[in-house]
Length: 283
Image (cartoon, rainbow, N blue to C red; front, side, top):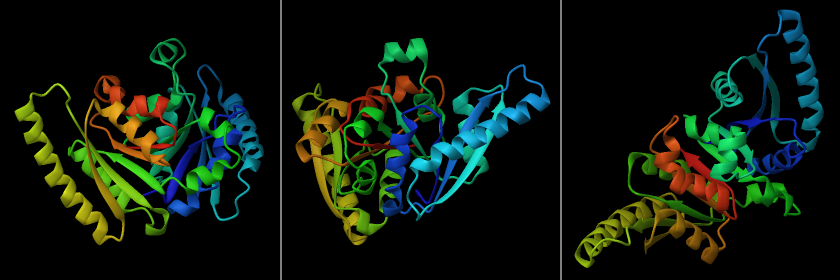
């Protein structure tokens, strides 16, 4: 699932942090990382575009010196066009046979995102591939960013509403190397506003589903624990993460495009902005 990943190489000072993080991904099965960079070529002539591509390629290669790991195949790909940076990166991912994307994010608030935009969150909103996101603020505060990636699956919280997207997220976890996984907490949040009878019925249904998923995980040799909380989903996940000192979160999404934040913003984007660990979002 994370065998071939595309990493956004934005050439900002923070790139060094996410590059070090990527050096831990081989423990999750990563063999190849494509460094993708997008040039805004609006209004440029052909020779100028070619020169800009060469310049960007050299700059990305220089920045890639932070990728000190030797067990990864590293490739540089440059895109030039008039599309948004997020669109260019998603096209690069599709063209390079990536099966996941890795993005650092500043975890901007909704107001900040409205004013300045967020490439990483636009990628998250439109990606057809899993996206592993980690805030730069977390990476700056650890001694070993690569170890954060290595430990992603040690204590893993997967939030599920039993939708098709949640099921895909669960299957993605089962696809990770077994040795990279410690304990998997399968979390379902029940609407706290339900009346007692409806809440009890919802809880019984969730427990039945979670037992089935727990059995499936254990058949793969993965230790799994079902968890039911009566709370708003994002708050339930964040509380579970804090109590378990989780090292990673996995969540599914239901939609893509401009309205995706209305569908997943209260959960996935909240987790990306607030969680104390990396978040894997599976479309």
